[in-house]
Length: 197
Length: 197
Picture 1 (spheres, one colour):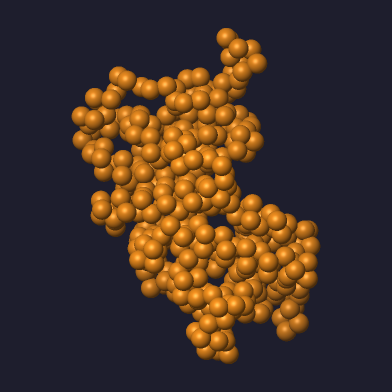
Picture 2 (spheres, chains in turn cyan, brown; picture 1 turned 90 degrees about the vertical axis):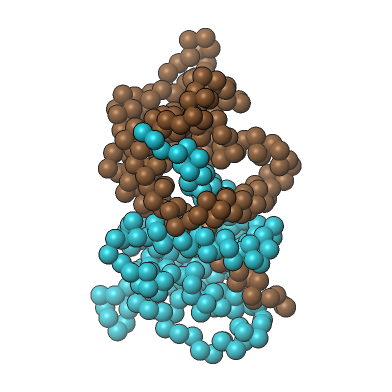
């Protein structure tokens, strides 16, 4: 079998690095969010809920987190038990259930989000702005290829529409929530767009 | 608070992309390895065990996977129940327990490793060799910074020594296991180095 070790080695190292970096980041995040009584998974759900428009349904959270409705539903079950989230029956549609953040979660989320932003700034500080853009672009290429492996029929455009990382609106809302005052954030403040369902 | 939204946005996007890419990759891997009755977590443990020298202990696996001994121990418990791994009492040191791969796991591992390599090649195919090197380097920078956040006292050198992704030996052994015949792999075949404990 005449496969080139060099090229395999390079591809394998990309794969390992993608995993290991994420693993180390996750451990850091558990440490960061642990201070506020949250796991990084719980934080992701709460930050996503905060970035979406009411009413927030499990399917919305799952779509933004690019996870299955089933797995998000299980996380939500645990968060309900932990007193972080409530399931509320929709008044207009009795069959529909929307999610709401409890005051306990609300109290943890804001300082956690601030700490998250500090951590993100710190951990990406060795990268120049150009490095960051390159890093994002290379990730996008790998991610889109992986997404195609997962969903052979879906077009790149459809992927992009569903991609939280390419949604400036959502990013702005997150920054606004963190009370980051900038011209751009202020300018966009009034016109929240309805998230695509 | 005069924080620059542009720079925050860029750092946040790096963070999101790191997570999302890994998440999508994990889902792909579950699909790839699922065909051979393995989860991606089980595959990681088996591939690591295969790359290490006997006797393999939980602490070795944990070190290579950069996870806590506790969490790897729980994974091993489940793998023992699934008939993939055995815990064997060491003859020379009765208190020590080494791990061994069962024939069931052995039968799944080789085709799974082949499929993994095909998948890794496919998913990294949009990246040129230079892109891959850049991608690895940028990951390394973020990962080392994250590692420093996690272990404030540890030096970069110590990190590198413990880093599976910078171990050409281990990579070569993995490629050899996959029967990839190259001059480099053949050349290195005879001189397996003892993994650092």
